[in-house]
Image (cartoon, rainbow, N blue to C red; front, side, top):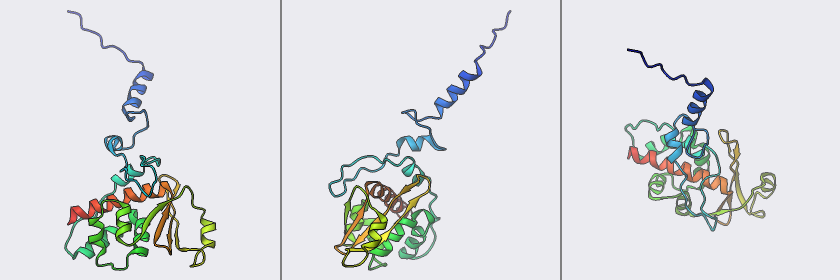
Length: 199
């Protein structure tokens, strides 16, 4: 009885098949957790008239979803909150909350009660406004009551190489670009998720 010979597959075809398996549904390269990157579209919450759109920052939400939460342990709710918020990935969001929160003891409850980044800002007495662009040098020149800007909070996200500035204004508004509003929305939701797992 003759044995059936195994069909030889050209090496180039095998490489192409592997490459296709490592790509997402639209042909985009996948990271280490392809299933997450395929299903993790950013939340679409409207902010002050800005059209609700998925993130234009490749990998932002995917990298946030891969963050490792701190282990739950004993302590008061404010202590657990500070431990979570003090993680390096929340550095930019912490700088914003530090500037806006007059009552640190109430902040954990306010974060858990809010469903979006815009809602937590509103709970702290500020309204989120989105502008097309923020020119940092111009904003530094407008610091003070005359210029209307209370604080300039620059933030640079290394994985996406994106500049994501935030302005805190004397008229009780927080100004962001569409990219920075989307980024901090996703970051806020991740903070809230980690706090809920420890509640």
